[in-house]
Image (cartoon, one colour):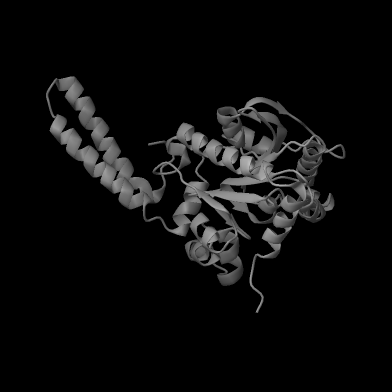
Length: 317
């Protein structure tokens, strides 16, 4: 079990601790209690399946925010090679909350773009907690257009609470930058696959999420607003965030059922942070498979289907 256990995981963590203590006792006293250890391990496995097999939407949100989850740069390092990071929007600055660059996925050249959070306070300040400024979205669009120029498919990793809402970001055109990306991404004539690896918050996520295929990890979420924001608006009560998570229908399973996304990517038991290498291999398989299918689609048809995909979302009564 990784550190930073969540409240609902406490029974699992406590049982794991007991097993570890028993193993230490056996090692120290040189006695055979293998049957007791085996019994506890079976109990632990059953407890994990019960705990993680019946997660509420709010619990999935908590897992999506787990500080040990793999981030964009982790996935790039684990499943891609020859990554060359590119910088700047040629207008204002280089936004460290948005990663962009060329890489190889096996033998396929790709342009990879994604949000990046930090692992500690210093890096989070540098990365702005994964909340991009307008220059981040302009950087992303700049390199998507470069990928189109060289006929290179685009892989997107989404992981943000939302676009940065500060005064400086608004003064520099946050809303315009995101709106421009939505309009332009519809017409970029190369395959685009987006994967929500953690948080998929509001326009901050959608600003790089207009893709031919949108996939969401099993315990990630994709929503117009955070549960806390929704609870504050609807009930003026932040303690009702779990209720908001329920009514928002923000889980991968709900989104697939409603036709908002194309695929739910299974995670290791307990979440991606419990086995990052296995999670990376699964993400790689999905990304390679989706890109291969899209590469076989004629460009005019690719754009038509992408446009139709987003036009078909929602119900008008």
